[in-house]
Length: 313
Image (cartoon, rainbow, N blue to C red):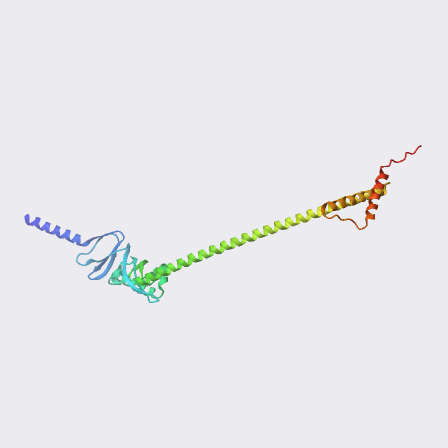
């Protein structure tokens, strides 16, 4: 009886061991590569699987998730013979577990080495200045080169990103001086543009001021000319009216005599003024003329003062 129990226990232990050895659980987003007697048998997807004891074994385990690989820093020579240190990050994904197991010994190491050689090749075709400007182009070219070679490895290269580009210290100093010179140049250009615009604005202001002054002077002269013309016109009209009235007065009875009297009075007044303005008495050479004028004026005055005879009816 005891021997039977022992035999049953041994058989149960063997069964449990065989079950543990042959039963396989594959996690989600993973695949296991199974070999039978050293030859590829099948790829197991996620789930529970039973293998044949002593014949089947899980040879490779592959994750189908996206994997991130750090590409170590390496020295690259640009087209203008400048050595720079470049490192990056590579994103890959296993899409065929069988090819990843039998297509290459170590797909991660192979992808990393191919990324480094492809990056050196791509950077060797461009100059230093463009390496900072064309990072996206560099990333795309590296991805294209790796993806073409990794198709036989069952691996898909998703993207490559350059983390840092480090030029030599001497080149960094030269680039800093160049950037400083560019900034100073831009500042000088900006100042000159501002001064030029200020000069243009001032010139434009002086031009408009001169035009406004000339327009004001022009209008002033026009107004003065119009005023002078109006004045001459008014004086001429007044003179004409005066002459007209004088002519009408002369045509009346006693008009001519009144005119002679007026002339004689003016003559005497002006002669008197002449005598007052000078220390030396000026006497006309023809004294008879003056006396005749005075006599005429007195006679005319006496004639005018005489009352007109009253005519009887």
